Length: 228
Image (cartoon, rainbow, N blue to C red; front, top):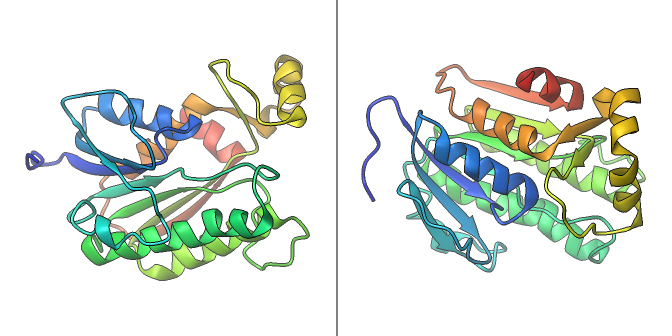
């Protein structure tokens, strides 16, 4: 792997085979401030690029094998996740909390000064009191990430993420939202964000390269303001 040029960044993107992570990857590869991108996922991307290094890692319950790939990175964009209802509650917590925390632990060991951009969700509840499992687990992951010790943590809480490119929707609710999106966007602009704009925002803050320590939570309204 070639060393980055002065002022340029080495990024890690997790979940680049997913909707938001895929756009984050595209934007990172095109970004002039990014020298290298390491994409880590459970299956192959099927693309090649002069900036891209790809690592297939199937078990995020144990990320120790990623220690070398995560050493000396400037920032991580973590988009790994799943839809509520598509897996059991136990699996949802494992993917949302355990996988995130395990990855962050190994990243921090090898790249203690890295920035961390995390794809959370609207309504995430770090207090653990929410009746919604998704909100509790995203909140738990947020709380743990903030305590690990990264100098810069950026938590993104989008509402409805509009899939810019047609896809097979995971459930009826998403099919309905896609159908009414044009009207929904006009009536409730702060409750929607296109997937490509979200990916761009997550990469954008990660590559700023500021030395100040900060923890920021971006609600849907904030994310829209970042890309307008």
